[in-house]
Image (cartoon, rainbow, N blue to C red; front, side):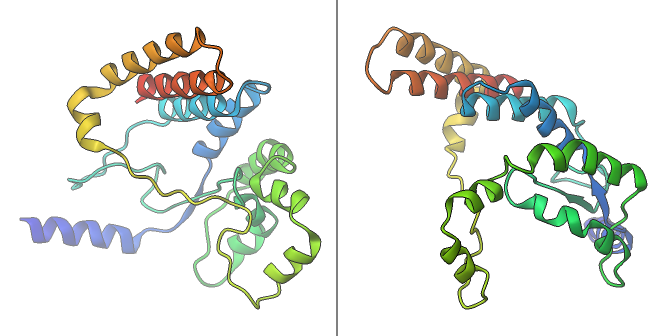
Length: 209
């Protein structure tokens, strides 16, 4: 029955502990290291493709609506490209705190320190913001007198045309994107290169999905 299935899902969630999950972070970082020097939009597309290829599809028992990144019901994910790297110095405290602690193994800590922290120290949006935002402005931001939820990150709102996407499918979407790449490669307008890169990225993502 639906009620018992939902109750089981609820109990599994409430009974689970939160663990640090690094697979997404590792794959994303790995791809960015491999694509240094390429256009940013292409790097992001390749990083998404690398993550989709590397993270297995997980469907937990009793789920009807599926789709989860972490390998456990509760997974704490570090997003170092934005301002997630800020929590890295606090991981030991997070691991040992009395309430809402996170399971973090010694191997996890080594991966974070050796692979993640060192690479993103000067590349994250947080680091970029701190380099470019005037010191006086940052002092106001961190004074507590104003509330700015994304002082060094971006908003992630999307408005996807699902009816169009699902009616044409990803193969058709990829084919259209590849046609646009060839079209803009022949043009000499100032924005032709950026448009060709956009459609190249779209083709990479369509193939990955």
